Length: 216
Image (cartoon, rainbow, N blue to C red; front, top):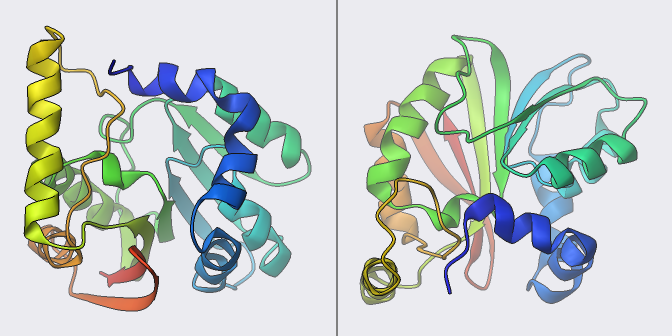
């Protein structure tokens, strides 16, 4: 049965960190790698989309303890766990959907998202990425580490499966339900460029997980 996104993660909060670090291929490498890609300047402003319990921030604060983070997540429990980890850091946390929360204009030096955006289609992501691009300062950038569909057929299958499951379960509301619908790297790149980013490059990959950098 499909579960609403926030409820899905709230129910699994007690095992989330262990699962992400031990059961996801390459996690021991891609969290530190992602952190290394983020700004190292003192007092940099960074937006974290789907920050969860802050696994990427654990690595990033080792590199830049002065960074100022704005984190957005649907799960109150996840945000509370994050706050408990980083009581001495400058963090602004917002409970809500990053599709709905305003980001501001030319505010952030960089943005990051790890293992969150694979739940959404290109159609859903395009307005989000336009808003994200506008929120970055000139020359700012977005680092996305996520898992991607290996080909178009895989992408279409899971998008169609979500539609089928929603119909089967009588889901008609506009809320997000937890189900993976990853894009191919090519389609993710297209969405970022269409949203206004000037360039997109692949920085690294681990199986089907990639780190992508999109520069404003």
